[in-house]
Image 1 (cartoon, rainbow, N blue to C red):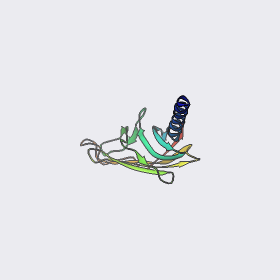
Image 2: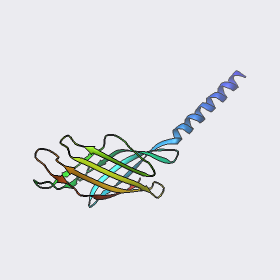
Image 3: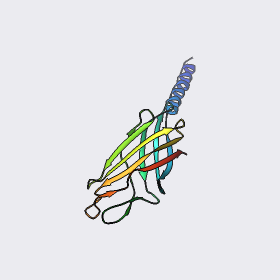
Image 4: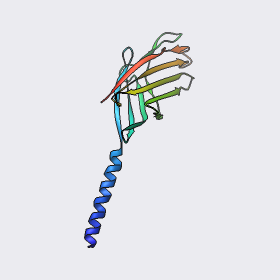
Length: 144
């Protein structure tokens, strides 16, 4: 009798643990910032609802072209913290050490299979690169 109770308790514990793990997972998205820069991010999904965008990064292979007063440069980087998703939309702003701002907005479409948004860098990147900007760049990404 004790063996039966222990076995039943173990089976129930495993079943509840697997349900808890099945409720939360991450999904990866890859895409392009117009005209030809790469980007990627991950989402935290809980019970089929996208809750957060994490590890948003751009320019790993080829940076985003940024126009500065001293001439164009290519920028690569990423957001450290997560961005909360509400009504399938998210946004975030990253401020660099010299005051440059990176602003990203996004929206999930087609039941989370695709995402679109805008990307923008503006401000002074360093003492050597001032009055920099990308303008508003559109981006698209697909879940892989």
